[in-house]
Length: 315
Image 1 (cartoon, rainbow, N blue to C red):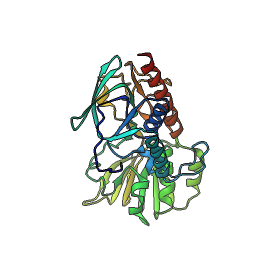
Image 2 (tube, rainbow, N blue to C red; image 1 turned 60 degrees about the vertical axis):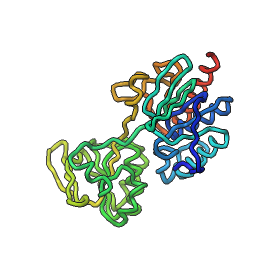
Image 3 (cartoon, helix red, strand yellow; image 1 turned 120 degrees about the horizontal axis):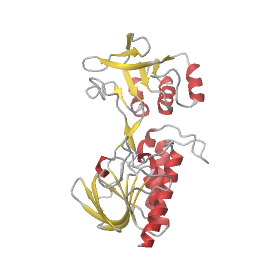
């Protein structure tokens, strides 16, 4: 969480306001500050974004291994040391144009700035089946690294076929008795290397061409119903935990009147990070893009901040 320095910082005006303190947002703050612009980063949860829950990052150029927590700590400190200010709060509206924007938070604070960078990331997608919300925290989870230790030496299931699902299954296989990896297709979309590792593990079982269609248990999850898409057969698998890793969805509804969104709710912005609204830029997982990785989030943050600084200089 944000450090408590005993006082609330309320900056009424700044050059650039950045919404989201993940990799894209903090990188944007670093580049804005180094360009001589003042920047405030808003975050409703904890800084670092979802990467903070990753136990081992091994695909960031120049850093062979680092935990998501340590990476986020270093990124936050770098931004803070450069003078980037961080505000804990939820932004509910942004209005304005021509280099004068008003940003309003849920607790009715108002800030003004000359440019805005949206770096809100994306949130975990839910299955959308009965009792899912009811059993969250009682067997249903969306973060294996956060909650996996609660299921040590127990049987669990992972639902998904991308990199997150494969990574979750690998992690859980090291601490759980049995891991069922359920995917709606006959092949995984994630890294082939990870799929091959999982295939070699005796306590991992693939359940392909299948979807989770039911959650069973009274006070907590006791089993799941899994339906085969090809045959329609339903089987019940006893598990104590279900880790849902079926992708993410953006959280951009608050900005739908400000910038154009695509059909899936992502901000329409290309590699230049420009949105449909002059002076408003988008960076990281919240924008339309083909690859959502730590490296592309950092790149977006640098591009968006540079574009925002250039926009301000032209005013």
